[in-house]
Length: 323
Ligand SMILES: NC(=O)C1=CN([C@@H]2O[C@H](COP(=O)(O)OP(=O)(O)OC[C@H]3O[C@@H](n4cnc5c(N)ncnc54)[C@H](OP(=O)(O)O)[C@@H]3O)[C@@H](O)[C@H]2O)C=CC1
Ligand SMILES: CC(C)(CO)C(=O)C(=O)O
Image 1 (cartoon, protein in one colour):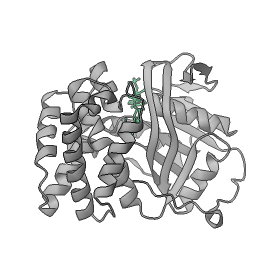
Image 2: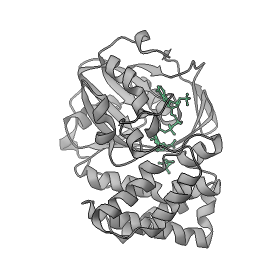
Image 3: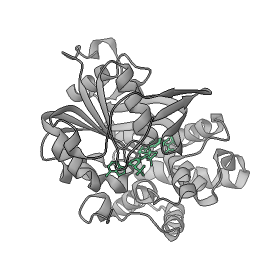
């Protein structure tokens, strides 16, 4: 689980001026984070692959329009942004290369707002300029339509505890999103992966919302998947224990049973699933270290059999899928 290392002594210095940010991927997370950057007083452009009219975020029954420009081609946006925030699904990352190469200059920070543990590997082939800031997303949001995002719960992003992480915290300092800087990002990333390791595949495979995990046999399966993920993460150097698996089950218990996951949303919409990013990561780590992960392997096979996923090579940008 995420352990906050935020401390007053680690506070960021104020950024010199309103920053210019581009959010690539105007979906659930991208729209919520763009709204926050805008609310913090910065200039934001939403970069979408198709025209988008009047993006709105709904929260607690209130729908707010996000009044920022939407671009559909890189040439419509000035190069040299201070921040490029990428919030596409992982398998779409290679296709953001045109945006990133156009928008990022030497001092640009490219923030990867995606699930998974290998943000650096995923983005390294795409960055010709600028620096990557991996961000773990504790924001649950769902696209109800292309321009209507329901923000269900969560207002936290976790980044490494370094200078770029400090600037990112400052960027969102005057928004309702909290940026937590973590000194041990491997542990933070595996802690975040735990939140996904059972909930995402099990909701997607059953096409049920979180209430499915209240069923005793599904809860047992969830606990098994989480225990495997803890073991694989530990072998990779993450400071996790069985308590983290139990805390993740507690987190699931505490959620509104009608909450979904990003993978369920993709399954219901017939989009590719990020299985390689989540269950695939557990299986690969298990295999690397000789840690048995039979449940994760079985779940990975089931997810693959749904079709429409993305191979590891595609995720790393080595073999881009056709648009
Ligand atoms: N949703 C959630 O609650 C959470 C999601 N996450 C993670 O955050 C990341 C984003 O997820 P989420 O917001 O749910 O995803 P969505 O599917 O809601 O949004 C992704 C967006 O990216 C756009 N996109 C894809 N390719 C490109 C491209 N080449 N150029 C511009 N835009 C592009 C899509 O466009 P189009 O509209 O055309 O499909 C879509 O609008 C994922 O890694 C996910 O696992 C993490 C925590 C929670
Ligand atoms: C934490 C959780 C489960 C929140 O929605 C998530 O990360 C996802 O849906 O991908």
